[in-house]
Image (tube, rainbow, N blue to C red; front, side, top):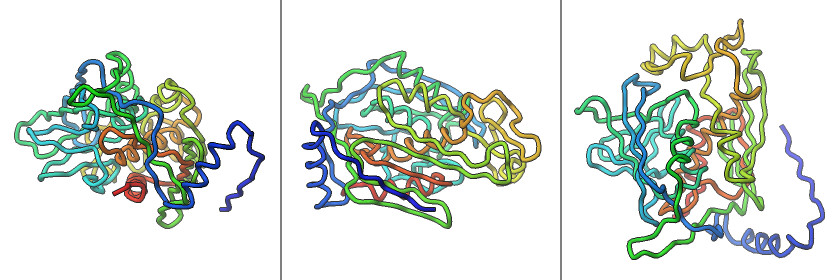
Length: 326
């Protein structure tokens, strides 16, 4: 696979921005720059309850407003677990946070919605149905991030203030030199760019109805995530379902919370919400995993062109570690 870069004449109006970008690019791989926006939080609290995909248990999540600078973090068993890459743990088919012997599983859809909707500071209280559980899983709902987005939009978003009543500017990471991680023929890379863009590819040659798909997306306005990405549902290959269940996964999985595709018979629960819904869902996951770069209410998704091919949560979080500024 080859990548070609075409250099076009820069418009005079953007010349100064490009010169500043080029100047920073000569110094460091990642820089933290002002975003031109203030940190935000929820206007009110909101609570949702639902079944978890892998454990099959019922969990309750309450999203609460938080002060500027607090960032996003989970509260479970009266302990706090920051939604930060330093607490991410590799686990099959989901992203897990681990701290103080407690685990929060399948955090990616919720964090994707919070990151994309600009909820920079949020206290996430989560409870499991069993009082002695040491791990809990975020509900899967219909397999997308739509329910989280709807809940956020229902209560609204406010500018956050810190503990002395001051607003705080939101900073965001800029990628100044190419960064990539790979395993076999799968990779995720971040290239310098003047705006955030995500290009994702998947390839399932054994499942013709999925096949090879590519989709490129950029957050051009506040509502495009809700329209273009959030409704896309998690997917699986029907012939792999039994193997996953034997591994103790997808105990709560059903045709109501995932789109399932058979190698022989195609999609088993149409209609799809998009022709390339499976590929769009990979972008949803990637945004959630890269949100773990965020610290102190700053942005998680960097200003870069991020290109992923056949990547999963392990590669996503590996890239997030490379994008983190100490």
